[in-house]
Every structure is written in structure tokens, then in C-alpha cells.
Image 1 (cartoon, rainbow, N blue to C red):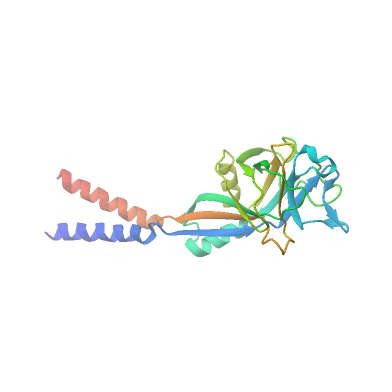
Image 2: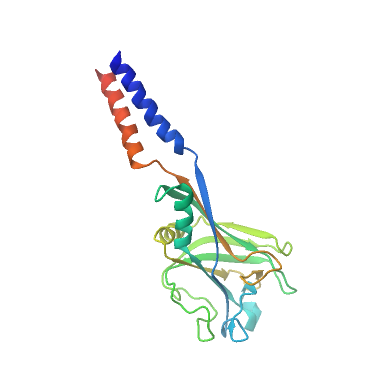
Amino acid sequence: MRNVIALAALVATAGSAFADVAGVTGSASQEAFITSTVRPDGPRQFDGVLSELFFNVQGSAGGNFASFGALRFDGASIVSDLNASLGVNNWEIESVSISLFQANASFTTNGGVEFLWVSDDTVDIETPAGVTFPYSSGQFGTESSLANFNFVEIADGHEDVIDFTGAGLTDLVNDILAGDVVSLIANATDANVAATWAGNDDNFSGPGATLTVNAVKIPAPGAAALFGLAGLTAARRRRG
């Protein structure tokens, strides 16, 4: 009888440990520290510095105004925020999305935009001597697709939420977990599209590009070991 009571207590303790973390989730949101609109003459400038008032993705039909978008986020800050809310390294990433807030103009046009993870965080996306439109494979090192999005003009301030589900999600998650700078590209898939969003300096249509990482708490190693021991003990008693 004493053995049965002890086993029940062990199972209850282990179950409690898991119940404490079951369903516990957290999220971290990080606004891009660079939002660059890259045109044929390089990253868009204003008064000699990078212009981040708007973040535009415009297809090749835009001529000199054609552009792709380049974004950079601080992965270390995301990790720090999740460690603070869920425990240091006591979580795993479940999903990642980006929010972009419409800042429309007379030339805004519906159409397709592809979001890509890219490996090279050192490419110049800020100065007149930097990278130029059009975007080409290998321009930012390794690339992988995160999502294809159909931009539809709604209204200034409308939040477009793009869930990243493509093959590049693994690369993106690994980048975040490593605490690295995270670089993303938004590139037109339609020649006529002109997707117009708020950049970092746009105070009229809402915040700039924001990466949201959702995570779930996982059991501490000690709790997992305890639960395994309880299961093993129960199995042995059943066989006995």
C-alpha cells in the first residue's frame, strides 16, 4: 500500500510540473530597425540619409520608382523578451508573422509580394552606394521563401498581417534563436504592384514593420525526467 501511495504521489508531482507549463504561451514583437526602399539608384534617400518615411514595394512597371523592400530586425532582443516572459531557454517558437501598416498613395496598386529570408546581414541597404533594384537571387547570400502575399489597398493604417509558413521559416527561426540580426526582403511578384506601407518614420499611419514571434513554454529538464521516472515506475508495477 505504501508503494502505491508513493507512486501516486510521484505521478501527481510529475503531472503537476507539466500542468504548470501546459498551454503557457508568450510573444515578442520587434519593430524593424531598418526599413529600406531600394530603387534602381539605390536605397531611397532624403537629405542625404536613408528615407524611412514609407516602405514601398513596386514592380518593374514603376520604372525609376520600381523598388523592393529590405528589413532588418534585432533577433537578440526577441530572445531576451521571450526569456523574460517564459524562462531562459524554456520555450520553443511556434509561429512568426509580420505586420505592415498601409500608407497609401495615388499610385498604390494591388498585386503580389513575396517575402524572403536572406542570410547576409551586411549588404548595404542604407547609403547611395548600396544595393540597387531589381532584386536578384544571391544578392543577399542564401535566400528562402517565407510567404506570398496578395496586397489589397484598404485604408491608411490598415494592418496587413502576413504569416510566415514557407520553407524559409526554419532559417528564420534559427536566425532568431541564435540572437542574430534578421534580414528580410519584400519583392514584387507582379510588374504593376505598388504596395505602400509605413516605414520607421511614419507617425501618421501607425508603427513600422513589426515582427511577431509566438512561443510556447516547455518543461524544465528536471520535470521531464520526473515524469519519465513516474511512467517507468508505473510500467514496472504493471508488469509486476
